[in-house]
Amino acid sequence: MPIEWGKCEMRWPSRTRAMRVARGQAMPIVLLFLAALCVGLLVLFNTGQVVSKKTQLVQTADATAYSVAVSQARALNFAAYMNRAEVANEVAVAQIVSIYSWMNFAQTGATNMSVAAKVAGALLSEIGIGVVLLEMSEVLDEINSVLNQVRHGARAAFEAIVTSVGALNFAYSEAAKASVTQVHLYADGDLVARRTVEANNRANADAGMQLSASTNVVLLGQVRTLAGYFPIYKILPNGPGGTMSESTQTPGGERLKNVVMQARDPYTRARSQRIGGSLLLIRASLTMAGGTDLQGYHRWAGMDTFRFLIEEKRPTWSGFKWKTALDLPLAWGAAQAVAKSGSWSSYPLLPGINNGRGWSSPYDNKRYTPYNGAGGNGFVGRLAAIDPAGSDSPDNALLRDRALQKDKPRLQEYPDTSNDPRSPIVSARASSTSDWPIVSVEVEQALDALHTSTHLEGMGAGQFTVPETARGDKLRAVASAQVYFARPRTLFARADGKRELANLFSPYWQVRLVDTPAAVKAQFLALDGIAP
Image 1 (cartoon, rainbow, N blue to C red):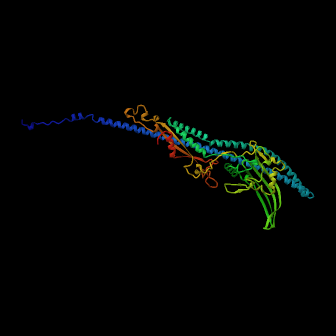
Image 2 (tube, helix red, strand yellow):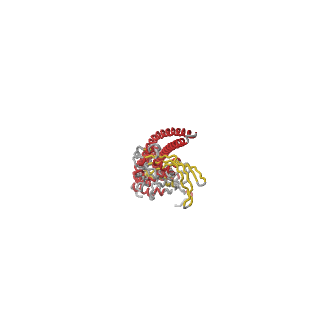
Image 3 (cartoon, rainbow, N blue to C red):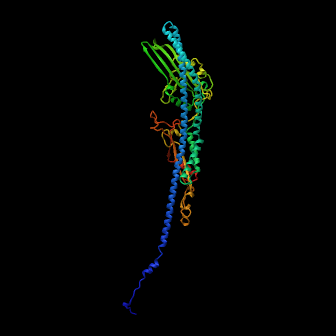
């Protein structure tokens, strides 16, 4: 059949129909996109919550470690204050002994002047000056009577002070020793750590953080190490009369003795004067010498002497030398702070500290003579040793500590840094930060306490669950702080400008946050039962 081109008609699909057929095909893509977006939002939300919680844990761990270290530094500083208090008290006793010795010195001087005035007045009674000298002797007798009354009253007061100071020093010693024991350091550190975590929980709306069980084990070991840096130094009793021997001297006793001797004030250390001159082959001098020393570990002894000396040059086989022509004792006195029993002869003054060799100062490398030379001030030194109180009994020159047993050390036991060269604290003295004691804590929180989509009702349920994982199902943070010694070079600088080594006589123990050593981290991982 022929085609009629004019009547041919082409039919195309309707656009409306095509669009109607394609409608709804984009919906699955949109749904998939929305699902992915929801999951992404949940992941982002969970990540933010975890990061926020991790920040809280780190900050809490830092605060806890720092607080525990501060409690340890305070304990060390407290021990330093107690040791310093004992040193100050002993210096006060030395001052009292010095004053009482000088009172005895003044009494013998007044007595000798009165006797001399009477003798001279009797010899010169025929002239006017003799009458004046006799009247002067009467005045000196009255002064001597007043001095005796004052001296006797002062002795009772001085003994009460010496006894009280001894009791205080015993209490200071016990407090200092207790502050650096393992039991105190651990108990105080554990209490501070728990209170710090609780305070951070309250500040973060009861966040549920807590110390891990591993912290107790690690902290106990670190406290044991810390306490080992500060041993308790024993003070052994002296022999009869305070004699020292190889068996009674101890490094700890010598250390404290040197600190106390160095802390003496100028009056206690040396109260000496000398005037004199020479003419041709004759020279004359007036010498007053006095000082107070710590004899052994159990008594303070002071001596004051005053003499008039005339010397003349005489020829010898080796040339001209000064020889004594007149050695006239003018005044003398002595005093001691001793135990509650024993007579003056039980506590010999001579030959003096270290059997007459004097005190060798480790601070300026000088040797100081006993009683600053008073014992060697000619014949008058021997008079002071046997007749310390003038007209009174020698026993009246003793100031008794009514609580101290005879031959027991007056110096008390005390804690201080270890002098063992193998101790880490010795290395730390060289400013090596790795050797100073540290304290480490671990703060944790269970995953189910996190405010993530998994643990919030109505969020992330079903196919939208975004699981969180952590080692041991807990988030953890470990922090460490370090206790170290550093004396400020500005506010409390030393007068000699030198750097002070670590010790428990200066309260300059401080704290800083430090990186946790790898060994400590591994210890926490092992204790937590987590493979590293």
